[in-house]
Length: 106
Image (cartoon, rainbow, N blue to C red):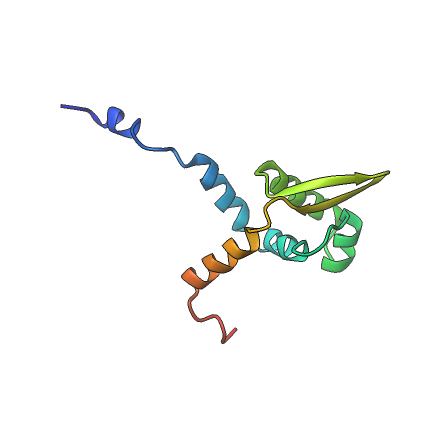
């Protein structure tokens, strides 16, 4: 008879997926993702557009980069951020449709 520990080793941990969902569970980070859907922006540009302090934007960007949702491109002293995965917005849209079937009233 197998014990619980041997059964647990048969299953994938889903830890990386769990980390991505934790990162996506923040409305400011979702705003940043949608802001970057068709463009590359610097921290300063995002600060002006979103009206958040630069330190807050930088912290959110670091978290998004840590789970590989954002990448950077250096242009001289300027650092632009962009989405790593083009399908990320489709994924978020699908999740929204599944979890909030009728969000037209909002």
